[in-house]
Picture 1 (cartoon, rainbow, N blue to C red):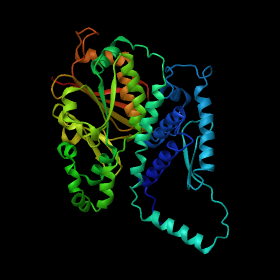
Picture 2 (picture 1 turned 120 degrees about the vertical axis):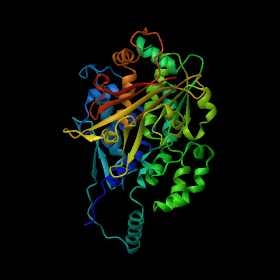
Picture 3 (picture 1 turned 180 degrees about the horizontal axis):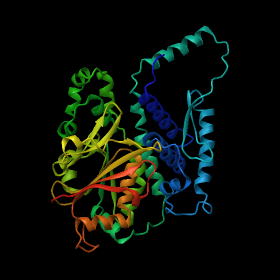
Picture 4 (picture 1 turned 90 degrees about the vertical axis):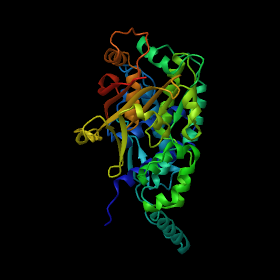
Length: 435
């Protein structure tokens, strides 16, 4: 019997999540879609097998960490609606899906399972042939192809998300002093800050080809001319790789972070411009303040900033994961931050945070990268926590007042798979960056 490829199974699950999130049952229900995306990413990215109501209330619905779930039933109400929408999808639009998703009662971690097989009814020869042809066609698809679709509904999500956020009329309260001062550095009043979403298709291709594509090649599109040779060397389909590179795909985890980022900007009276990596330019990175999301493989605009950074991200093809590497560590220790499975079955994740000047030293750039959705959220949690930022200031500039700007720095934090609280996100590496 042929062995099942675990990565291929996970990719198929991501495809199903993508299809559901863009279906008629969730695409117009922003809160249900956001909740579904969050709990799905916790299972697929962090191997979570248990997600508690308190966590969802905090991460999805903006409730405080210690809110009373007995008095506030927002998670339970939305979970009930989400279960109904999932059932409706698999009974109608997704009736032919071989795998279904369920959210069991008492636990909010989605469960992926094979659809129970129905008794086989007599079919015509023509129907049988059609079914056989579909099966054979699926078998010819490379196992990693579903990853392409797992990146998710980028344009649709961003448009729907932006629309839903524009409907929110209530003013966002100003954060605590250390948090407000930090984000004011990135979101100055009167000057929009670029939020640059990574090019997920580019990241997939570079990981599979194991060959870096430079920013210069990316900017002038010359990398498209070498796809055939690079794909051939890696024994991949050149036509498919080129088609993938032409897609405009964004990681759904980054789309989910947009809510928090735009709220942060609004809380300090700042403005944002959402940009796709392929549409960005050297001129923008020289003149503007910017927030870059993703690693260097999926966002080449990190490349010109890396000469000041000592942390890099490396892709491990065997496990299909990306992990941070400390270039200042001895060679024997540079792989020690590879994502580990903890005794409870969750994963230990990492995120890097770097605050640097832009290319003309006229503004600030924040780079946030992580091993998954939980790690990226943990990074934002850290940067929104008064205690964490006060501790950061105490280590970087202990004699400066809270109203002074923080010096440039790079930071590696550790975040467990089931851990989303900022005070539990430990600082692993902290270094000051000279301007």
